[in-house]
Length: 444
Image (cartoon, rainbow, N blue to C red; front, side, top):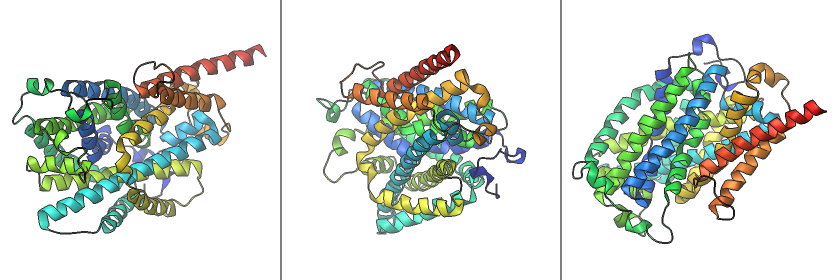
């Protein structure tokens, strides 16, 4: 992959294909990252333990279904998610979608560096008495992640294969600590934390939407890495490992550890206490120490390298003439500024809007690829691709807007889950409108 072809709209070469477990190791790094722990903390701090586990299960099933389909398509067609979007939405329509993808991924890049700065700075102070400036930490993190991305998918793959076993052991220790003082039955009997009761109480659908929002972009862009898998079914296995096994384990471990330690009412909403403080306090309570340091550095490094890799793919799909190395370095620099914007302060809102805006894209691509136009999903189509699929754009926009209006109570919700409202409506609308257009053409 040293020739840079993995960033371009060319077929994946035979020698670039690998067995699915290697790709699953890269994808699983998403589950072992700090944002996944943070998502577990958020959901368990807003719902009873029983409802939080239900939200995790339902949300994970939604994501694993979408991820399995998208992963399968990527492995079968050997195309990145951004090329799939070009086929479905047309070149001009895909430009809007891919730019939105790039912006959101840079947001995630910033969130992860933000978490890196906060947690590494705090851990360095607690463990070794070092006071490292946040800007230095941001530049250091971005430099390491950018260099890994410049080398390409192979470097990300090697990094993930080496780190996944270590992170799995640390996560298991974290999970075991949750049950050191409480049984499963005791956890399931725990009520919603006091901080989440009242007018701002979280509903089950909110918990599901937040879980979906935390990982849905990863599921939609899964073709970026599953296109390297030898057998299409490997894309399905990768999704199951990532979202149904690793994702639930890590999210539940963090949430149950927080519930068992009773930190939600103690730390959340207290002046001067951040979400990273809550996570680090939990890790220190279970004596992770250096293990917490490994989770932060290793998870952030691999995950953000993958985020930057996908951002480059999305941008190159829209602007193919851009120099890959210059683009990668430039985006790495932008990531530092994104981190300093402190998106983490609006983490819940960020997750919710991600699920609403991007899940309709999956609905359109899946319906188009599986039901309407399966034969056109190849690189030859892109040579004479249509400019704009107005039906796809309309279905995407209407699905997202409807979900937002339903959340505000302006229109009735279809499923009581914002992400599912967006998915179901966009997919159904795209199918119906496409069939209607076909009938009109036949009639004419």
